[in-house]
Image 1: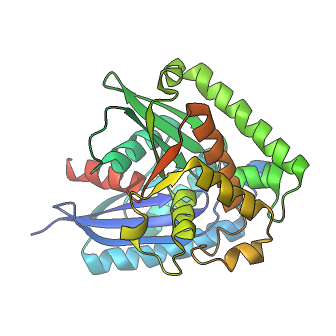
Image 2: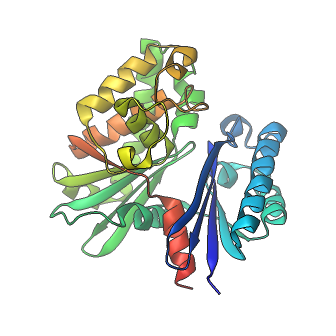
Length: 307
């Protein structure tokens, strides 16, 4: 009998599902905006409306898993649940609704799964490959140096930077300056924690993943409808990332949503993700970003299939 496994990611901004067979062939990939982290930065609590949005999606995903014959899986929760005082209550209900194992990942575990997923299928490169996973509440950076995976989880993501500094609408110069200062302070902490990051400056292959990067790739391609092949391993210059950051920060969420490629539910936070991405590219001296649609979910399913 063919085994089918599932990975579920309850992130700060979206709740996602990947179902694969024993040959690691994708049977189903789903993503829905649930904004689980709504208000967590200020209250340290997962709000009832955010919980309900996530529970409803998880119930739907269990139906899809049943249809595919999934008997084994892993649901992971990241920044929003790590930071919330009622995070365990969420996990208990998530396990009840999905029937799979659940786990809160720490930053290094999150980075490790993301690294495995994002680097699978990449062509050889004589430079080190650094993955940057811009999430809603945190941003993971991970790289293998001398065969050892080194990583850092920055406590900022597109939702957190929006709520703390930028706001959802047109961005003022003062708000932009506050966001940049917040991001630079966190990058300084990353540099202090992982001194080897300094060895990569000017000689690194930067791979971006997760919703902010995927949506940026869709915008740049002008895709009204998602096309995985068109955005997976798309090359984006730093000038392109900065161009889209500056375009979006000067627009209302409604104007952003009208752009072909914008994903509903990201129009109020994507600009913040691009602030983070630009700062990371500048800090590492990277002039180009390679996008990846493979991410933490792919890393999780790979681990499930080796058990």
